[in-house]
Length: 207
Image 1: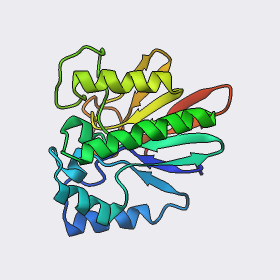
Image 2 (image 1 turned 60 degrees about the horizontal axis):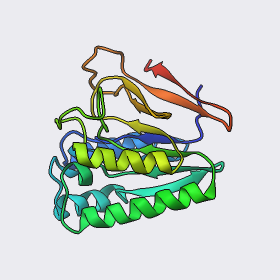
Image 3 (image 1 turned 90 degrees about the vertical axis):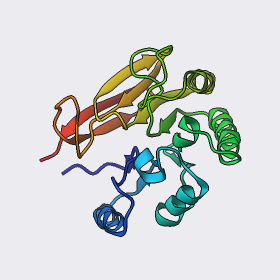
Image 4 (image 1 turned 180 degrees about the horizontal axis):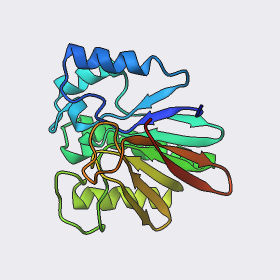
């Protein structure tokens, strides 16, 4: 029996936002015996978020971006939909919060981990914008911030395909889903082991 310290879900908690989908997700989540932290995906706040869809998410699931500490490490949960499709005022608030949170985490010491939905990029930092990645200018801005503020890894989803990259020492792991994998990998999840000397992760297929 695997008993991680906590669980993170990298977005797309549901497919269609309706009462049944929400209740099904919450019923399963509440069976977990450890904390579970949620990052919003495009199915949760819309491909182009609005104040209405953001408030719907916040009322249903809680904050769409936040951070927490665990054993001296900082975990930052992002709403990357606000970078993918900027929304007046909301994206500016998120940017300011993110930069301040990242700076404070770096000043506190310890490794920093980012949990989000959209990919920074799939193959290389200069690849054109597409459905899966963040806009080129924004991704370069964010990656520069991550590199200069001690970020160790990005945990993401969205692609329904396992993609593992390294950007100047930052691990970027976009992993398997529990619903559909375009690369035909089995459904499952990843167990991460973090220590002052190493960061490792292992895929665990669902039974």
